[in-house]
Length: 411
Image (cartoon, rainbow, N blue to C red; front, side, top):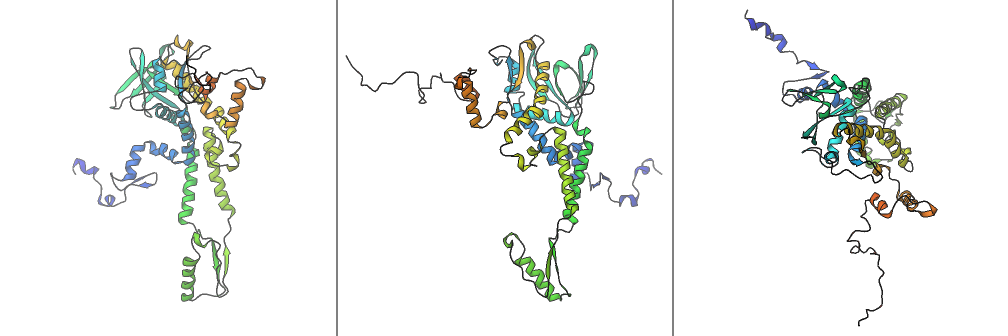
């Protein structure tokens, strides 16, 4: 027997169906299911999680909500001016890297943070100036605490090489952490939640695929002839099926009676179980139930308080983590004494126009209140131009000079 004969398949083995992974049968190396299995990694756990609509909704709210908020670098002091001359301000507000907008960068980093517990971006510098923030893909960075209590990061490049970077060269944002070095992955901690939700989804799919979904039955006292059965079946299909025949009266023959099927407790339990899985995912990310389109009664007058709740108890801690991580990585020790990063959450906390009008009236001194805003400050908060612009008169705004209707006198 030749040496390589032992690796050959026996004829009976070649005729067997190909092996499967996780219950999915692959027909060959070009099978789409096999290619997705290979690309996804770890049996597609991440993709399965994002296919959960509740998780996708939560992550969309968190990542896009944080990504859309303006993030600026400010100077300490009474005037609280933006440090637009600092290179870090341009990175977070204008252009973090050559291929991403600030919202795209923040959304991608927040998605990695929510799913993996850690988000990493390499800081590219020109001399001492940070000029680019390049986010790392999942699984390409491993951090450890080195000598001198400084973080060291082992990074895998796109071509497979290894690179060790100091903490000054990496922007690292952590989720909850047990050791202060690596954040905890919510996806891994709640793996059973997503598995149970996927099981409930498959069970519901099986009910629709194999279950009896008839709305009721027509009972007859005696057996119908083939002709009578075919005529009744044709009448049901043509005259009483479809949305156009809703509430249409049915004519029965030969003592036939219609008995609709009622919803059973088992059906209600299935719906309750699926709603419970949505609540588990919402609890995992701290997103209120109404934002996942579950409670219709919470919309309306309570939507303003719901938005405040989402900002204060869900986004606030995440924004704080971003601000402090950026200051640690992009500012020097001396700069951190006078500069700080801050998200602008005003757009998410604005009330109705009536509430804004009452607030600004008091801010300008109406009702005997001590004014704490000037007119131009109010206009800036509303994204209006200042009143002292040169083109104010051209826009029909008063210029401060009184017009006279008297004819011009000449001497």
